[in-house]
Image 1 (cartoon, rainbow over the protein chains, first blue to last red):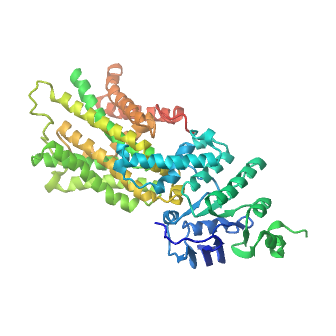
Image 2 (spheres, one colour; image 1 turned 180 degrees about the vertical axis):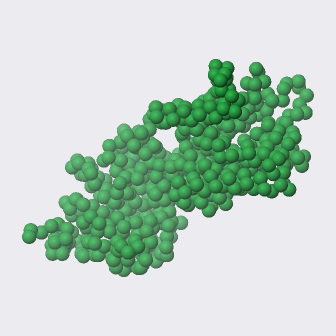
Image 3 (cartoon, one colour; image 1 turned 60 degrees about the vertical axis):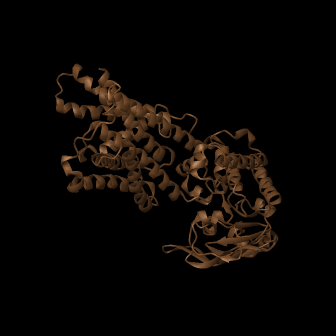
Length: 264
Length: 295
C-alpha cells in the first residue's frame, strides 16, 4: 500500500545516494548521486553504455546496487523486488518495448490496471457481483487513457501488429494505467519519426500536467531532452559528470566533450 | 464396435482433461511442464487407494485433485522462480520421482505389481445402461465444466495477467505483480485437472501400475496441444482428437500392412504420431485451431 504521506510539488520524491552497481568485475554505475523532485521531468542522458538503463533498473528494483542508498518518499529502501516498487507507485517503460504481443491494446493497458484489482479469483470466475463492478470501473479508467493517448482506433488490435511508434504509445498507456507517482521512461522516442516524436513529447508533457506524474526519462535526442526536461543528469562510463538545468548542462565543458561531441 | 467407440471416447475424454490442464499451464501462462504425468499418477493412485478403503467416489475424486495440487505446490514454490527451460527439466524429474516412489513404496502401492481390482464407477447402476456410457457422460460433464471455467479464466483479470506473464514476464513485474505467485497457482490448477483425470483413469482401467505413468504420456499430451493449437481451448479438443485418431487409427494399418508384426506395430504407431507432429510444426506451426490474429 502507498504510504499516506503527501509529497508537495518541488519536494524530493526520490534520491539516489552514492550508488555503485557491479556485474562481476564490470562497474556499470560508480558512486552516482542525484535526486528527483515531485512534479518535474528529470532526464538522464549519456553516451551508449553510460549506465542509464542500469540506473532505471536500480530505481525500479530489477538490479540491486552493491553500495549506496535509495530513498523513495522519505523511506530508505532495502533490497526491493520490482513488483514491490510498482505497488509503491513506480511505473516504467522499456527500451525495447516490452508489450504483451499476443494481446490487444485494450488488454495490454488493462493488465497495467491489474494491480488495482483486488477481487479474488473465485469472484472473477463468477463474473458477477463485486468482481464485475470492479472490472467495469477499471475499464472506464482505461478508456480514458486510451482517449488521452488517441489510440481509440487500435483498441482491439493485437499489439504485435502495430507499428513501432504506436507500440511505444501503448506501452506508455500501460504504465499510466498504474496511476504512478513516478514514471520511468527508457528512451520513449527511440526509433520514431519526427511526427511521432512530437506526439510523444506532447503526451509526456500532458501526462505531467493532467496526472501530476513525476517523470524520469532516458533519451538520446538532445533537442527533445532540452525541450522537455526541467533538470538533466549526465552519466558517462557509469560516473555522473554533470547535473543541472538543460542550459547549465549544455554549457558544461565535460558534457560537450563527452556527449555532444567536440571539434578536435 | 459401439463398445470400442465408447472405450475410445472415454480415453479421449481423459486425455482432454489432461490437455486442458497443460494448455492452461503452457498455452496461457507459458509454463513448460514436462511432468504432467506425475500429477496424473498422484491422482490415479490416490483414487485407487481410497476406493480400496471404501471412500465414495465423490470424496476420493476430490482427494485425488487435492493431493495432485498439494504435490504441485512445493514443486512450484521451489522451481517456478527458475527460468522456464530449467523448470522444464525439474518438472520432468518430478514426474520420474513420483513414478519411482510408487514403484518403491510397496507397502502402499504394491510396487511394480500395481493395484488391481479398482472398482468400476457406477458398477451398481441398475438402469440397464452399460456403465461405461454413464462414465462417459460424467466425463463429458466434467470436461464441459472445465472448459466453462477455462473460458471464464481467459477473460478474467487473472487470465489477462497469466497471458501477460507468458508474453513478457519482466513487464509484469514492472506492473506490480509477482509472476511466480501466479505461476504456482496455475501449476496447481492444471495439476488438479490432471489429478481428476488420473482418478477417472484408475477407475476406468481397473488396474494401475507405475509403468503406465512414464514421460511418454506427458509428451503425448504435448503433441496433442501442439497439433491442436497452443493457447486455445478448441486446440486442446482438436489436438486430442487428432492424437486418438493416429494412435487408434494406426491399429487398422495392420490390415493393409500385414507384414508388420504385433511388436513392430507399437513402434510404427509412435512413428506415425511423430511424423504427424513434424508435419504440423512444419506446415501449421500454430496448430489446427491456431490463432491467426496473432503474430
